[in-house]
Image (cartoon, rainbow, N blue to C red; front, side, top):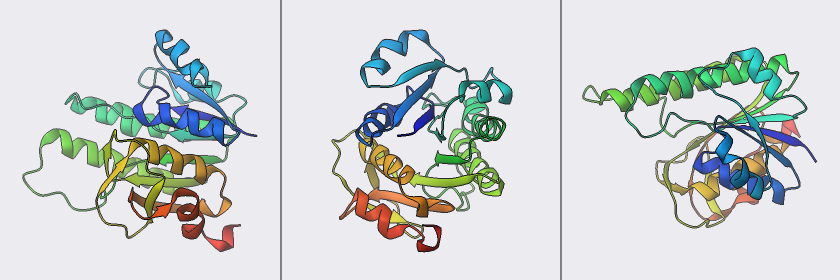
Length: 223
């Protein structure tokens, strides 16, 4: 059993992830900035620790990660149209999480990104969407350049539909939809599969059970 720090611990994917981690016999640690979320997250089986992504430095992240074996970065600036928060949460939050993991002696790091963020943006792309894509792109590039044992999951358009348990997963998977619950299931499965280290995959709903999709996409050389 491992203790998994989840940055953005009250996010919509994260709340599914806490349950999925408990089912996988891991201990989720939800990192949140509001005390009032403690009771709800505790009912999901998560330990709750306070962390303000925007106001805390890398040393503070490291302190919040104390005793954890892996970090999942699942935070996002939200759909409120705030361009600045795409930088301070989606990018800088990831960068501080990476550095915090390093300072805490944690090697394993899984990041939730978004499908297609390396593709060129059309000239008429709106300011908010451009900021979001660029933040996710740059956060992924920084993680890939780190010395951590990283995995990057890039979901398609997220839905709140019930989990299907069936996905398409891989570097060449085309755009599509995926439920937040299925993203969480993939994240939990990735943490149990050594061959996922150094992998960056797109994720949409598809025909393959989650555990099989993760296992089939993993690198045999990393096992």
